[in-house]
Image (cartoon, rainbow, N blue to C red; front, side, top):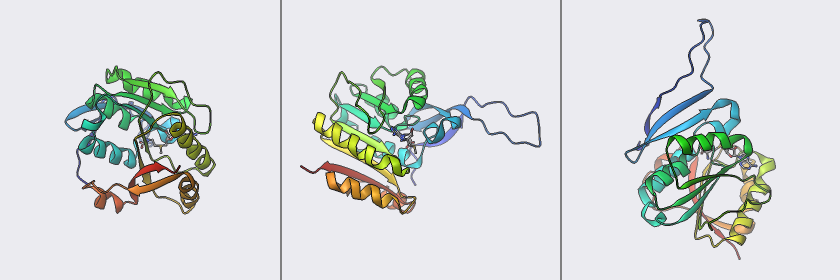
Length: 227
Ligand SMILES: C[S@@+](CC[C@H](N)C(=O)[O-])C[C@H]1O[C@@H](n2cnc3c(N)ncnc32)[C@H](O)[C@@H]1O
């Protein structure tokens, strides 16, 4: 895969254990990635479950946005669901200062996102708790773009995630939804059945990297609400 996001460099490693027999991986660390020529700092924390690290689909979505979407997101309000470390939303808000980006996740992950916003000195990114299937937060601006990467992996969350997408598209005039997906299990079919009742989904056709990430079972879709 072409690497605009490359050279993950750990800049604040947790000290190694003095016990040489035991290899202890850092659980919390600050990492830097290069996105479209700018440095982006991300807080990782492996104790916070899957949201505490960057996933390949998140990189795919970030790369696509930086290659194809930056101009169209000028002066636009964007909302990211299940952001984890926030790679997608942080990169977008850094590269498009005129955008406003709501970066959302469950309460436990919000400190990572808040730290990411702070250390990247972003004033146009807003952390917001948004739990799928629960009441939407009140937002000061109306988002017109929704982004999500690697949010399909846990069956009990399938219907709540679809419900949240429905609620967001009912409440706001959403002109674009980009959804990066990594296929892991057959059960994911259930998600796509639920999704297809309310949304049409199509693979993006203008991503030159698609052939490469498709080989790793990653796809990038646009979603369109069925009326
Ligand atoms: C596999 S991680 C992907 C993180 C990030 N999008 C990426 O690609 O690196 C899935 C994310 O979905 C979030 N998530 C899981 N269940 C959720 C729920 N019910 N409501 C909101 N977010 C949820 C997790 O906290 C986690 O950050």
